[in-house]
Picture 1 (cartoon, helix red, strand yellow):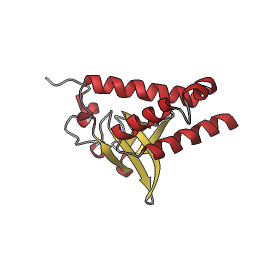
Picture 2 (cartoon, helix red, strand yellow):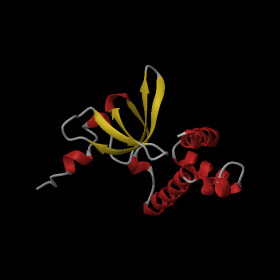
Picture 3 (tube, one colour):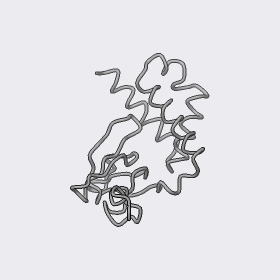
Picture 4 (cartoon, helix red, strand yellow):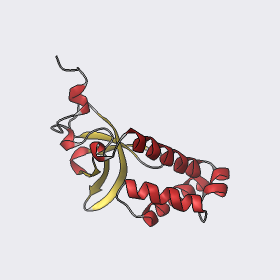
Length: 144
């Protein structure tokens, strides 16, 4: 007997337009990237809905049909690599959320350069793109 939750984890990629929890995706609307992040949930009631968590930690409801998989969860390596990526993402989120952490580990430091390069490499992006996204999130935090 199959696990009752198996159909919602989408092991065969036959639902949610091929998305699985843990995939790194980008959602494009009219050819423009509007969301980029990790699939954190899919709704059982709607085959075309996926929740994506961005690097800033924001959980966004996306149209699964508009999402392109950048990196499949099963291609992200072993458990150790996943733990390292989780640690890198956590520190980058702290840099965004906490001004003191930003002052110590943020823009212009070797730590920031290494963290953004590691995150970019794991998500098939450029370090400059990740830095720009983080600085935008820091500025938005400062303005609020």
